[in-house]
Amino acid sequence: MTSQITILIDADACPVKNEIFKVGERHSALIWVVSNSFLQVPRMPNVKQMVVEAGPDEADNWIAEQSHKQTIVITDDILLTERSLEKDAIVLKPDGKAFTKETIGAAVATRALMEQLRSTGEQTGGAAPFSQADRSRFLQALHEACVKMKASQC
Image 1 (tube, rainbow, N blue to C red):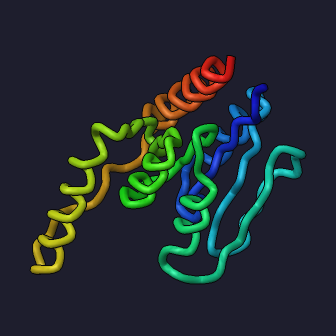
Image 2 (cartoon, helix red, strand yellow):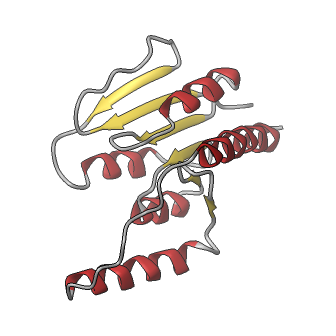
């Protein structure tokens, strides 16, 4: 028996929501747009919205609780990534980079180091600007994740 692919979007700052809607529709995936405030989402039968209570980790907590083997999580949050991978979800960053259980440890350690540097007043710079190449890489990665997930159901 096959179950439906579910895509969970950590949506408050996600720059690729429209791309997710397109790919998700093509693969008949259920898409959850999870945020701390109301966001405009397309009126499509496969798109649902979850507005969680205000709070720094409320959206992350909801997404982590819903994550499972048939879930693709879209987030830039390293700790949410770690929690979702523990539940065997596929996790993609909006730039198309995929994390695995083998690679998440280094990302968590880097995050902790950067947080420590920032707490001492060190200027660490910000993220690189989001580019069209990032968007294209994400589209390809999400399509491939959906295909892989469908194949694993057979």
